[in-house]
Image (cartoon, rainbow, N blue to C red; front, side, top):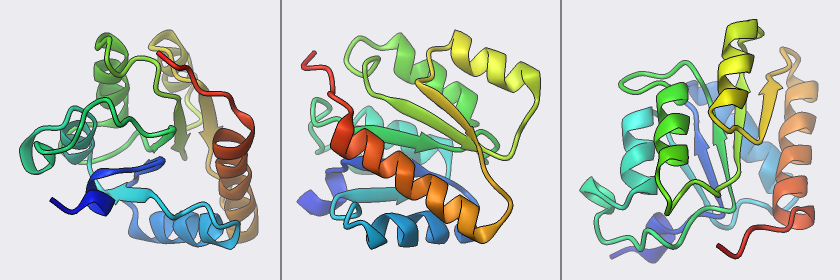
Length: 149
């Protein structure tokens, strides 16, 4: 089993390859991508988080420090991923940050009802998006004190 592929401090769940590449590049500038896993749909994210499918050999207790989650994705959308994470005792304490282009009130309200830790609307401008991702990474990896379960 490839340990690197099965461990993540940051789990980036983003189907837009340009946004994912920009986020990874931003985090890389601050040396925050050593243990980053990028997945491009919600079904793969659930497999990773719950250690099933191609990630079946992964330890489910080896949770990411933060999940950066897009809402609008193929197969399983971000709202469903969040709901599944929060319903399971083993994963409900993982910090989840929604990073999306949606400013719709119903998406924001529903995300918070489901227990999201933060809801960030992606800035359209390259530099603002890069800065926002870097600040999120710094906060969740360097400043935030994770739960010890």
